Image (cartoon, rainbow, N blue to C red; front, side, top):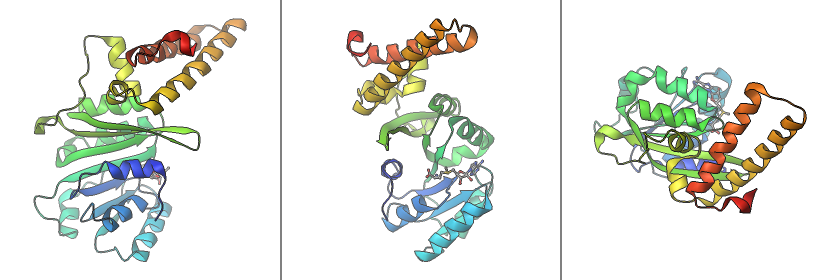
Length: 256
Ligand code: SAM
């Protein structure tokens, strides 16, 4: 099965041997590929809508994986984790990984928060938000996870962050946030602490594009004497973008 680069990046972060819960599985291709490639012994594919779940079940059947992938209708993280463990005959020591990809960051935030008491069951979370990645990073931190890996994928002209987080209380060492520097920590939440630290080339092209667009919007707003919250919001985003370029040691004059 040929997957998009975005989904390959998600799959590439799954720790070998962990069982995956793919929340918002839609077509079900991620769990199918994880089991086919021998990365996961078994998976749960869940979705809140019956249509996508039906498609996922059909695909799982086509690949003969119904014994190893449970398809579950659920809003957010399924509630009966131990029932699903039993259903899939998971070994007691099998670690769980939660995946959510291809939805907005605010929806992911509510999925994570609504599952707060079950999240301690997951050793890893892999998330690829399509908007508002800052909400995802802040929520992961609040819920006791630390960011251990990040990628930025550019596909068909769109940029997708992929974030991997591990449980801070299980000795995972993640990205360090400078909590005392508000602008720096806002910047890390929006663009990714590890992507910034690694001076990721795809993040850099995203920042250059974003800065150009924001500067254009800002000057058009000034011309039309458009002020207020919308203008302040654009100026704040320019400030964050410039800070990110500064962290990546890109001279400002190069990208005015
Ligand atoms: N994860 C796949 C990917 O990245 O290609 C599919 C993304 S698809 C755009 C988003 C899926 O999330 C849809 O199938 C939708 O029904 C599902 N979804 C939205 N809200 C959800 C929720 N609260 N719980 C579970 N699934 C949800």
